[in-house]
Image (cartoon, rainbow, N blue to C red; front, top):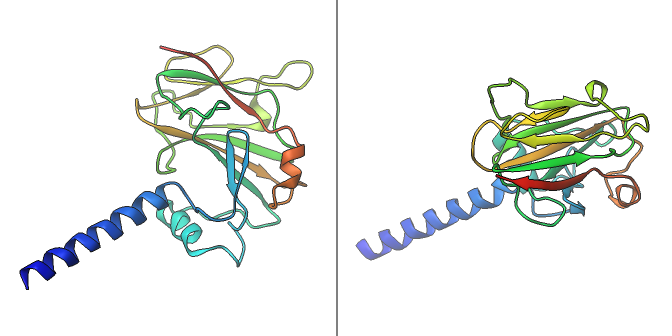
Length: 189
């Protein structure tokens, strides 16, 4: 009887632990990759899989509906290396077509990161841009000149790009042809 209890407890712990690890990464199904960015094609639709629904419920986020826009997430840079809070990253020089977009810094679980500067998001209308319309947003723990998105804590983070009222479809083919912003590691401390 005691042996059965330990087997049941181990199975329960393994099941909960694996589900937790899977949900931290978002939905494993229907994910499209565009450079450093990933997005789930079913989010915000009636066909969203149970993992996608659970991952969104975990952070309390209401997904953008199919006609409202797209949410892209970057947990790695353009070279595929995990984002490191000891490094400086440059995001830019352009974003896919959208009426409005935001770039947010979030912790590993998708929650906005608090920081001394009080800024966790940049909006497309408030960026300093070059004459060509291109931009560079620096993401780092230390203050940077120009468009700076501060990393509050010295722990893992992710970038979330939300495109509102975009002509791009959630299928992913359109984004392949568009100008997704690069996430380039500039230097590490």
